[in-house]
Structure formats: structure tokens, C-alpha cells
Length: 406
Image 1: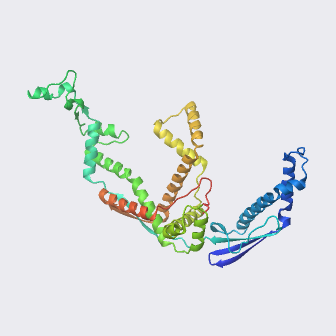
Image 2: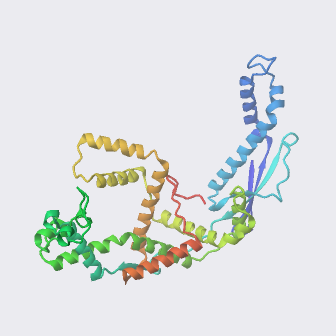
Image 3: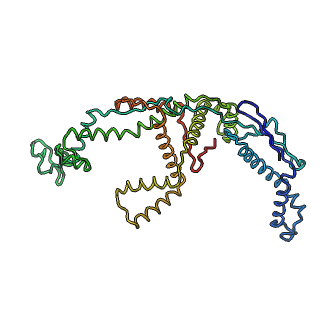
């Protein structure tokens, strides 16, 4: 077995793979012997079929299979031993590869083109500035929440205490027996008074005594409720800025070939050319993301995922104390949930993104910007349109595959 590499460009090379009889003969003979033991051919007792007949019947297929295994194993081992950081997968070089005749040939030569991941400097520090929006909660929003909360904790008006329309006007249409007028089907509510007792019902853990304190507490809650959306926008802006500010080349022609050959006819050459800029941007982000994950040792374990499931489960149950019997039941549910690969992958991605988000807010130069709710909706809408026209960045964190094969 002999493998050599010849550079064909700054980010491309061709691997030459030479296979000789000593590389495969022993394994081919072993497989032929196994076939001989198991073969059931009329006219021969099991295990007594001549090896020559077996070789004539299956030799070509066995040789082809073993050579293909050798190619795959040898390429993978060579890439690993040489520590080659590749993009995509090796692509057979059709111009250099000649037709293979497994009946006539004993030695074989194959050529594969490869593309290298570029080396680059990542501006992952205070030199990279990213806006982080904070939605201002105005008085009208607080007023609306106060009104809704006062009604929720208010006192319902009993139907007999309210003025029936039939009693108020002799012109009212007669009601069928047992029918309640529309106005009394949903009795009115007397809003709760703005008292310390009311504040305590809404926020039992807080010692709120005044309306001003109550409104400020509402303002804090409302602001926190927007965090998920503002974090999403911040994350997307951070990835776009990192992609824009990180400069490196890619082996574009190789990647176009790889896209065409490894997508099983899903795309035409014309489609790849048309959408390549979008793909290139996604590829850049994956390289940047891999570097961040590797250099900051970001990992998500099975136990992390189980803890997440337990936390969500307990939040939904809403109990602070779980007895041993209940805990055992919960663990069986967690174990069952872990068998759902799609759900586990989704949680795996969520945890990765949450840790990436935390890292962004720690490492990058965060510029806080206060905006009204309406302004934020406009910003979010514009970013959503941008994502659709340029495709969302993919954050592919394969479970147990933290190196992200590209």
C-alpha cells in the first residue's frame, strides 16, 4: 500500500493510492474460504465445494469489495495520520482514474482530489462589536398589564346583582325560558383594588407595598419576557458579523464539485452556481463555529440533556419535593425520552446554542441599545426577511460528534 499527496493549489491536493496483491490477497483468500464452508451448490456436499469453483463464481465480486474497503480505510487512516483538515470528502479524480478490470488486473491505482480547510485568524474578542437590543417597556404596556391583572384577581359580579336588560326596557325582546341575556352570560368583574394585599397575591415572594413598586416589578417582568427574542436577534447578528469580519479563502471549485457529487442528483450544476454564495457563507460559519467550540471546549453530554429534561419536567409538574417513588417514575420517563433521537438532537442543539450565546456575551464587545417594542418588531422583521433571502446559518451540532464533519 502506498499513498502520496501532490498539492494542486493553495487549498487543494490529489492523493494517489496504489494497491498491490500483498495488500488484499490474504483477506480475499479468507473470504473465499468462508464462502466455501457456507456454499450450498447442487452436486456438492456443504463445505466441500472446490475453492476454484467458488473463486470462479465469487472471486471478482470479493476482490472488488475488498479493494473498495482498502480504499476507504486507507484514505481515512491517511487523513487521520497526516492530520489533514479537510472540507467535504475526497472526490475521485475521473481524469486520472482509468477503468478497473478486476479479472485482469492485480495492481490498482486510484486518484482522489481533496480540499483543505483554510487557516484563519478569528476576531473573537473585544475587537468585534455587536449590538444587543433591550426593549423599553413603556407606561402604556404596564397600564395594560395592570388592568388585565386587576381583572384576573377581581371579584365577579353575580347575575342577580346586575341590571338585566329585560328589566331596564319594556321594548326588550322576550327571553325563552331558562335563557340568560347575553350581557349576563359572562358576568362583569370588579377589578381588584391596588392594595398591598393585591400586590401580595400577584407577587407572593415580594414585599410590595406601593403602586409604584408594583409597576416597577411589572416592568422588570415584561422586560425579561422579551429576552428570548432579543437573544435570538443578538445571536444571529453576532454570527453574521463574525462571518463578515473573518477573512479567508475557500477551495470554491472543489466545493462545487463536492456539492454536485455528494448530493445524489439533488442539485444541478446551474443550481449550485446560483446558490453557491449562500452555501459559502454557511460553510464559513461552520468553520468559525467549529473553531469556537474547539478552542473553548464547548461540550454537551448525555447527562446535560437528561438534566434539561428533568428541569422542564419538574417545571411543568410544579412541585418542589419529589419522593423516591415519584423520582423513580420520572427517571423512567427521562430514559424513554432519551431513546427519541430526534428530540435528543433538538435539545442537544438548544444547549449548544445556549452555551455559544453565553460565550458571545462574555467574549465580544456588547453594545446595549434601547429600542421601543415597535422598533424591535421592525428590526426583527427585517432580519427575518434577510434570513429567508440568504438562508439561515446552520448550527449542526451532531450528538456525540463535536468535530462536525463537513
